[in-house]
Image (tube, rainbow, N blue to C red):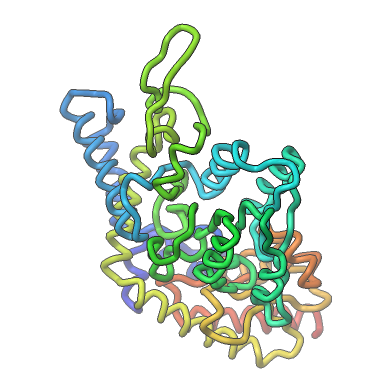
Length: 405
């Protein structure tokens, strides 16, 4: 891992005269040279629209694009027919809300979400419940920031039609027991939507084993380009769903006043996609596979433990994180009483450290945590080191000195 930084050109930057230490990976990750090269190579040698062209570079572009669909399917333990490319995890979740939810959720039905959810896996369900006169229920947390599965069991009923849960919180780092959540939901006949944006690039994912019905994530949180999302839909559900968007590519046939639509994943991919982004995403998957997800997960745990131990030396700092390593991913949020998170982030930036501060698109969760102004958040990835965390400690001391704490 010590040699990996050299694969990321942006990490050679100086911020305020200091070497960049990038600890905002839960928001987006940096891109290795192989991903940047794949993006440039596509536009330089194979740029053409896909699927319909019969000329050479169109066929090349189509092959490159569809090869990534196969890579993604293998990476998450699915079939390529179950993989839909979108622009983001947010669009993927909204696709399910529209294409499945509008058709299958009715007045009086129940939708269950968790207290950990990012707005992207909460607001679409709020709107769906409002529009359909359904009931929205929320799984609470325990005092240790993990999902209360006993409370979840009590929320489930014959009226439950959909359960929506993150695989890992972007605020507390909490890893949720997705397999157990799915099994419990399926007993009452409910479908399960999983937001895997924070987990897929860090730990192995096998959707055949997890058994969920829908699964969403983004390329940019796992070293791929922005503007590429993935939506997994269990194959037997696809033909029960209406299209999310209408236009070219998803059409079987069009007459002046009517149209018929293609089946399977084609039905959900209207218009020209982010072809170059998808192709470069394939290079990101190759890069992750070369390192190995187990090695990434082990590295995450080592850095998280080191950072927690460092922060524990300062009683002024409150950490929002489960106590057991197996319950926590590579995210560590903290707050200092009397210091706004944006002030913490500003002082850290003076030291060349990029962190996230604020509500993290999870405002209801931050209210529950008693941090209405938000938190400062460290989030790690493969190019981070213990030396980075040592620099964080220097910046933290500066915060405490400035605010006389």
